[in-house]
Every structure is written in C-alpha cells, then in structure tokens.
Length: 112
Image (cartoon, rainbow, N blue to C red):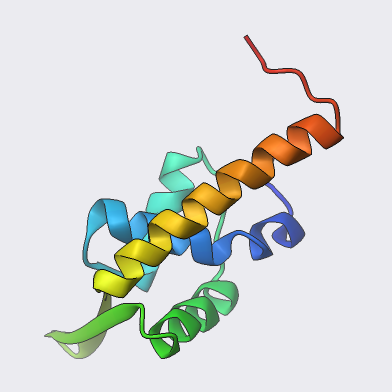
C-alpha cells in the first residue's frame, strides 16, 4: 500500500529534515530513493513535491547547498545547517506528539 499524497504533503518537510539530519549531504533523487527504500515503497516522493519543499527549507535558512559537476550534469546537494538541525528535532518531536494525539482521537490501540 502506497500512502496518499495528501498524507505525505503534511509531513514532507519533516521527512526531508530528518533524512538530511540522519544522512548528511544528499541530492534530491538520492532523498527520494532513500525514503522509498526505508519505507519499502510505501512513501514515494515525487520531484514535483520534493523540490518545492527543498527550496522552501532553503529559503527559510535551514539548508546549505553546494553543486557538483558530474560529467555534463550538475548535481545540487543539500545539507542542514545548525538552524536546520534544531528545526529537524523540533519538527520530529511535534510530529510524534501529533501521532499520539491522533492515536487517542481515533482510538487506535498500539500494535503489540
């Protein structure tokens, strides 16, 4: 089962921040593949969703970028700066609290 883009949209920045926090410098396609791999294909980020999020995070001053020329291609790498690392932790904690609230609200019992 692939999760809906509607669910992913609200968590995309958190996912990107966490991936960069865990894996350091990454480029867009690498991010999409890592998320797909880690979720066994349940979350598939599209370029149309990913790049606007990366650009927004960059505009918020949370990311540093660098470009590398690989043959005829230019690859843009993203990395969290100090502010981005702090924001990543904040967003992950916020999402964890949100999950707890949703479990309570929807009366979802822990799967054990």
